[in-house]
Length: 472
Image (cartoon, rainbow, N blue to C red):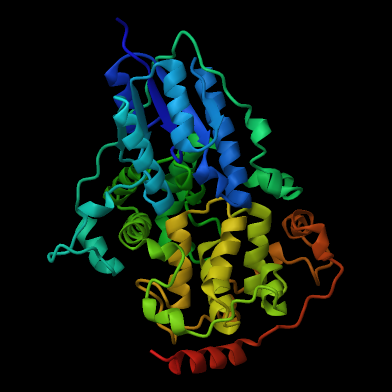
């Protein structure tokens, strides 16, 4: 009797290289049927992440087809869709790469239980992280709540060597029916913004590996300083690909270790940034409230504004606060789908501290707009900036967007690249903002640039007074 097929359930692991579930399926023997579901997790995605996922799934489908395989698409609740595919194909096993957010954990637990009940092997594999969250503990057997001790605990651990790309994908002789990716319309919410952002997307594992190689060969040397200068291409830009598993953290880690061994100065800092991502997942796993509520529970009493209809919030969202650093960063996001890390800190601090708005407003807006959206990193970053999260910035650290601009964009190269108003001949990137935004905003490059909605000094004083008088 031939071996029964294995369903390989793709999620945020859109690659062939360093894919433990693929290797396990091939070792099991029998045909392998790759599957992607538009399930409850995908349906929860907001605009830009859903669009970018659709691009990634389409690219993966093309890659598999070139290698003689296919990607079967099905829509519906995961438990039902997987069960139906098992029935249609006679699959004896379902393998997938592990996820760590609470929605995915609940979904996967239910699917695994249902499969085992009917005698079908069900197995999840590590690979989205370097260190499984439950394997990193303090001497007291607790999880880490501060980054630096977490870094010390893992920095000398062995990270598994990345797996090779399978040469034979073991396709079945007959394929089940598949939905059409176009019919799913994952990018519908992007509207005209899709055309603006698309040229900035680096799609698929080939592009991700090229990004990593270019960074290690030419940029990592100056990473310590270059990563803080938003006008320079000084970062790896790999967050887009890491978020969808088009590259793995352990592939990045081993490349960073090699660079460090070669004496490249910024490699150690790059490794620490990879572990910062791990730390975000560590905290999300142990304290899922990180995603939706104040990690420091006493901050529930803090009097943040939660009304998104206020004019200050609207100005912040539209990149029209009158603070050039804030506005340039927001516009970079609308044009590229990403935002420089220094910009993320500035716009978050301005919203939460100068405007005294709840971090959830910003977190959810980023979830709408970022193509590199990651649930753990996004929520931890916003809570870090607000002061309510783990390893948070102290309440008295209020980033001044004007002095930050003088420090990190002295010649205003970043600001001039993204803000058209006031320039006689604005660059294409600055003008692209007006093509990306909703028409209903009715903003033109001929408009006057606005005065600050809250002055830097005034906002700092207001924030410090509120933080110092907090009732906890």
